[in-house]
Length: 93
Image (cartoon, rainbow, N blue to C red; front, top):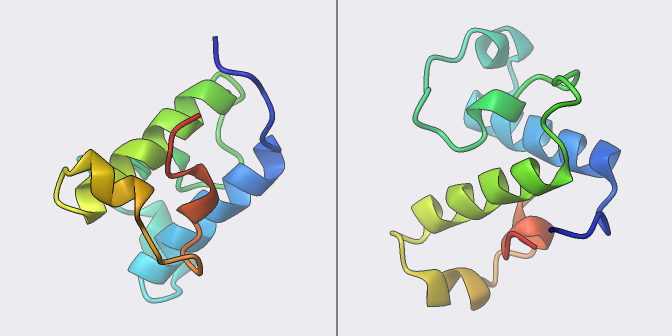
């Protein structure tokens, strides 16, 4: 079981900010996003249902980070993009 050491509100904000960055700052484009293969797609709206708890969100961030570094797990650990919204959650735990 994943410990709930992360603040769910901060995680929601981080996912939302990452999606806004991807969509050039447009809230309407984020809402209409069709990138279903994106690991953060389910979390793009700030009022994501509560069934998406901390553990599931962390897995989403981890998958997003793995995609970013080409699927190489060691590169996620060695990531230096500390300004990225996903950075604090990159390890998925």
